[in-house]
Amino acid sequence: MTDTYARTTSAWRNWAGNVTARPVRAVSPASVDELADVLRKAAEDGLRVKAVGTGHSFTATAATDGVLIRPDLLTGIREIDRTAMTVTVEAGTPLKRLNTALAREGLSLTNMGDIMEQTVAGATSTGTHGTGRDSASIAAQIRALELVTADGRVLTCSAEENPEIFAVARIGLGALGVITAVTFAVEPVFLLTAREEPMAFDKVTADFDQLVAENEHFEFYWFPHTGNCNTKRNNRSAGPAAPPGKVSGWIEDEFLSNGVFQVACSLGRAVPGAIPSIAKISSRALSARTYTDIPYKVFTSPRRVRFVEMEYALPREAAVEALREVKAMVDRSPLRISFPVEVRTAPADDIALSTASGRESAYIAVHLYRGTPYQAYFTAVERIMTAHGGRPHWGKVNTRDAAYLAGVYPRFGEFTAVRDRLDPDRLFANDYLRRVLGD
Ligand SMILES: Cc1cc2nc3c(=O)[nH]c(=O)nc-3n(C[C@H](O)[C@H](O)[C@H](O)COP(=O)(O)OP(=O)(O)OC[C@H]3O[C@@H](n4cnc5c(N)ncnc54)[C@H](O)[C@@H]3O)c2cc1C
Image 1 (cartoon, rainbow, N blue to C red):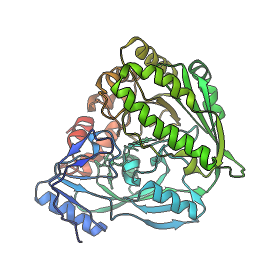
Image 2: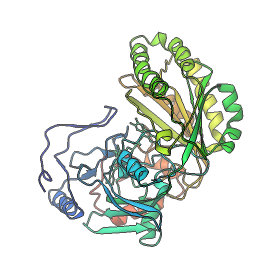
Image 3: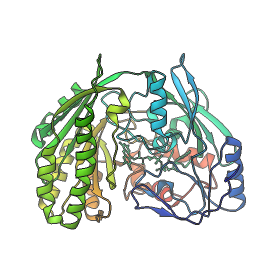
Image 4: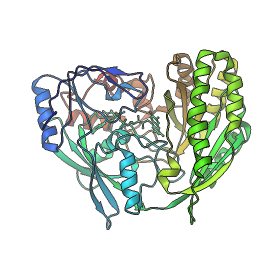
């Protein structure tokens, strides 16, 4: 148990750099027993506890001034069950390690988000999602999880065991205990053909329902200050695999999406007046392309330009109207927005605090380059989203409180009742949870 009780003097920061915390100590338990010990000791010392993943949340959901539990030593694949078609992984395993290990075994998750840097527990705890007509978030692919609760008990939760906890704990915001292992449904690895294509804003919004209905995974980016969008359709394919060429792939994914984009964002931050012109050029720089590859290579891509983000889930049928309102708001405001707005979808799912809980959803995500003041833009967008009954992504900037959230989540009380039972003394509380869940 080398550094399990190592004291920390340095501050913890999230990926975006907009959240800083100074825990009393940071620990890296290597087993469930060591973790139970950490929880006991924290309670004795009167300290609160927070498990972190890779800090990719834009909210203070993982921040603590008590004991920070790092995921580093709780990683790896525990078991692959080819009869049940499941994989069980340690909670701190990065998604990229899970994806590559599964691919080596000829297996894959069904759907995933835009990147794969996060840990499995961190990603699922805030409801990380990609886009899908039929397939939902990463948490919706969980078949069981192992949870160490405030009293040191180790609970296995699934549809059969502790089903009332399973119903809420797949998206648990770190409020119910520390997850130590996650079992996901897997399927034989398959190929996806991606079709990326520029499209006019008016056309995408007019055809949105049809584009969603005709594709397994449809998403688009709208470039503020322009009428231009980039669309992406991913559909299963019989093959053969045809990955992007090394050079053209590098030009699109690294040079344009990261390198040139970084320069454009820096320039825009220094000279905001230039942003509309830059947006017109950069929205035309990405060209149509088609490629076929295994799922994680199609769904995810590197994001090296740092940003802050707000994302809201809306009832699917409200998305186009809300997006038009965002466009109108940007057009008549002095705001200068260098980052595209991302639109994705999800089917309804059965997890209490999932942003798609019980309703078919569309997501609208707004971003700003790190270091750009974001309050004015995000406040204006949040006003539009909440007018449509929007549910904020738990890991992305929002200002909602428990009273609002109880109104948009019909099963909010089911979650807080389980929280009251599992963590009556609020060992796992922090300021963020106090705001969004209540005391
Ligand atoms: C570049 C970038 C791209 C992104 N793309 C997407 C996307 O495509 N789709 C999307 O939905 N989101 C996306 N996100 C948001 C991100 O997926 C979520 O915020 C996710 O929760 C981050 O995972 P993490 O491992 O960094 O966890 P952290 O941010 O460190 O923690 C998140 C939460 O999980 C809890 N937690 C962590 N480990 C445990 C554990 N073992 N037990 C209990 N609770 C735990 C923490 O306490 C905290 O509440 C993106 C973020 C970035 C920075």
